[in-house]
Each structure stands twice: as structure tokens, then as C-alpha cells.
Image (cartoon, rainbow, N blue to C red):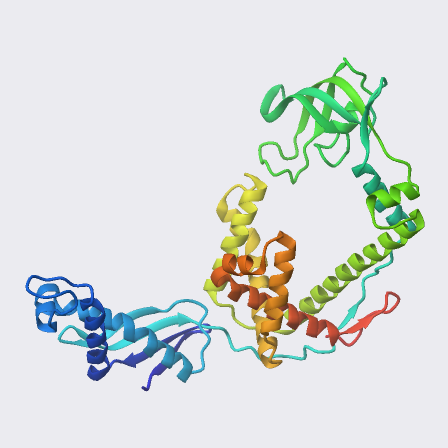
Amino acid sequence: MTSTLTQLAPTQVALEFSITDAELAAAEERAFRRLAKNVRLPGFRKGKVPRKIFEQTYGSATLTSEAVDEVVPDLYARAVREHDLEPVERPTIEVLEEADGRPTKLKATVEIRPAIALQQYKGVAVARPPIDVTDADVDEAIAALAKERATLVPVDRAAKLGDVVTVDYEGSIDGTPFEGGRGEGEVMELAEGRFVPGFAAGIAGMSPGETKQVQAQFPEAYPVADLAGKPAQFTVTLHDVKELERPAIDDEFAKAVSPNQTVEALRTDLRQRLEAVAAGRSRRAIGNAIMTQLLQRHDFPLPPSLVDNELAHLVSDASGSSGSAEKSEAELRDRLRPEAESRVKAGLLIQAIAKAENVTATPADLTAELQALARRYGQPVDRIRNALGNNVLSLMDGIVRNKTLDLLIDHAVVMGDQETPSGSS
């Protein structure tokens, strides 16, 4: 089969190809045999209806339609291979020519991956983010473990930050109550950062049985547009105060919260864990810095459908997490479009590098990833595989992406904290 290619746009082409009468006739015969298996007509056993009788009953167009549905995808795939294209969406098919109601020439319009002229991607110079873990970091980790094992003890004193209190409250803005601003018998830990700025600090200092007007200020970036940036007043009644009584940090504590036998062993263990987390965070930062440079070095057109799909995901995520902060979906799309374009560009660039380096997801890679998911969710590997279904292909794409990014990191010139990257234009 010979097909013709017409470039319609930087990432869109039209493929024209023919269907021979022999190809269509053979497909119609296969369609008839397939459909006739379940046909029952008077005077004939099931599956034994002659083709002429079938066509008289259901129309020859039925077989032609089935045949076209079978043949066209194969002809289209052959045309794609002939021109070495990489489509990024399903094609739009239209009939250009037909004879006696039977198509003879078709056109497929489809978006394709852009041709990417790869620039130097190995040896990118980046700075290594610091990964130092301090004694204070270890102290904070131990304090977090102690807090998890703390008990609540009632106290007869004024509340302070860090206490757990029971309160009634009702908020208003300019004297008008707002939705979600009222609670009764609410138990909360007084910690700034968990509430509207000023709310927790305003309760600190109150005594049980006291009612007080607490002033707070909604942040400019608050997800509810009607409240963002506005001052609020809360009428708060404090019912009781409890403090977190933490266990003593000793060897017994170390044994209770870990396999370690002493506090020093626990501190060493925690430091190693924190260093591993910091190293992973540093490696991710290095990868992001590499991609930032590579995105600057490469310029190529982006398939609109990929950008639109990515933008739809970003808008959906933002709408679900930020309430009505945006004035309109159009405004949200405008704000998120640059990020969608950057993500698509990075994905296409990673794929091009993976192809150049022959990076693939091996069966061993897939097995390891499935085992990791099984451990994370506490499920057998087979159940994870079945649950993923066709999404296994996405999992394999993720493996290739991660392996390619690892390759870029491993071949980067990573400078120490005191050094400055140079020559990375």
C-alpha cells in the first residue's frame, strides 16, 4: 500500500490511502461469517444463513460498514509506519472517494509528536542542594515520635499554644456570619498554621468558661474567594484545656517506638533516615534543575491536544482543591496553561531522550514496580496487576521516564555547595 502525507501544521498531518476492491471484499466476507454465526432466520439453522439471504434481510451496507471498520485501522496503521509517524491522539477519518457506496479512498487527520533536534543533554552542570541533617532535625523527629505517644491531661490554667482545647465559636465578617465559620464543642490543638492567622493565638490566654472576641485575618490566597484577604471576628467560648503530656525520652522510650535499645541508637537511626530522605529530595531537585536547563535549550512545537488534555487535568485538580478562588474557569485555564505547556514539553523531551538512549521498561522493572505497589497497599501482586488493567502501560511509561531522568542525573556535572555551575548554557 502506498499512502501520501500532507503536513497541515507543525504537529498535524493528513494521510491519504486507498482501499482496493479486493481488500474490501475479503473484509466483507469475514464480516459476513462473523455476523452470520448468531443470525436466526426462518428456514435456516443458526449460523447457516446464505450470504445472499443475509444481505436481502439486513442490507449489503451492513457488511460494508463492518468491513470498513475492520480494514481502515489496519490501513491507517500501515500508513503511519510507512511515514514513521508517532500519533498522539486518535485520527479523524473521512471518505474522499467511493464507488457504488463503497469507499475507495480515505483521509486520516491526526496530531503527531514533533520532531525534536536533541541538543547536548549529558553533562549538564547543576548545583547540589545541601543535604545536611542537623541535631535540631533529629530532635524534632524524636519530639514528633514523643507527641504520637503523648496523652491528654486536663489542666486548670489558661490555654497556651500547643494545648488541646474544646471551644464553641462563630465567625463573622463585617457583622455577617459566613458559611463554615461556626462550631460547637470543637476539639482542636492550638497551633498557628492550622487555622486562619490569629485564631489560635487569640484563644491562647483564655481560661475555661471565658468568652472572648478573637480577631483573625484570612490570607489573600485563601481558597474561598468571598473570604480571601478579609478580616474576621470570632466569638469564642473556651470549655476546657488539656495539655499533651509526652513520655520521657529515655531508653525505654526508644524500645517502645523502634527496634533500637537506646536513645543514642534511636538518634543514629533517625539521622540515617532523615539523611536518606534529604538525599532523595536533593536528587529530585537536581533532576528538576537539569530539566529546567534542557527545556531552555530545546524549542519545538507542542501538539495542542496534549496541552489541552494536560490543562484539563490541572484545572480539575485546582478546582477540586481551591474551591471558588478563581473568578472563572477561563481565568483558571489562562493561569495554568504555561504549566500545562511546560509539562507536555518536558514529557516529550524525556521521551525523545529515552528513544535516543534506548531506555525501556524491562519485565524486571515492571515486576519490581508492581511489588513496590503491592507492599505499599498491602495487596498481592496479582491483584495490583489486575486492578491496573490497561494502566500498566502508563506504569511502564513512568518507569521509562524515571530511568531516563536517572540517566540524566548520573551523567550531570553536580557541583558542591561552595561551587557555582558554569558552562551550562
